[in-house]
Image 1 (cartoon, one colour):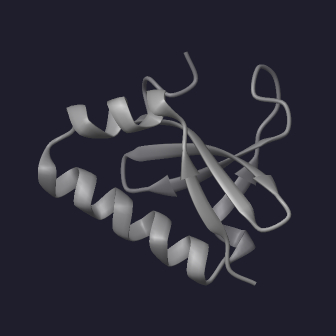
Image 2: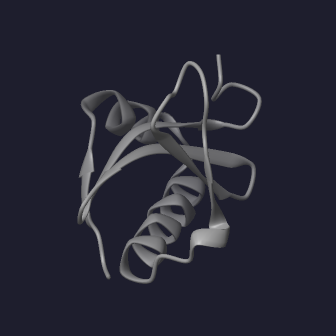
Length: 84
């Protein structure tokens, strides 16, 4: 099962602030996960992100919500800043 990817405007803004090589790695990781979702790469989050999942790509974390075949990316940040 592959996911359709949608980005929250805040997530796109966070992505544009990153170095181009880091942003490229993150986009590649998201595309790879969306086309071949391996559930061991994600973790279900709790408060304040109830219902969200975390995808880890290097030192960066992607917080997303999942509905049927939709993957809504809501936050992209360094691991030290993502849960703030």
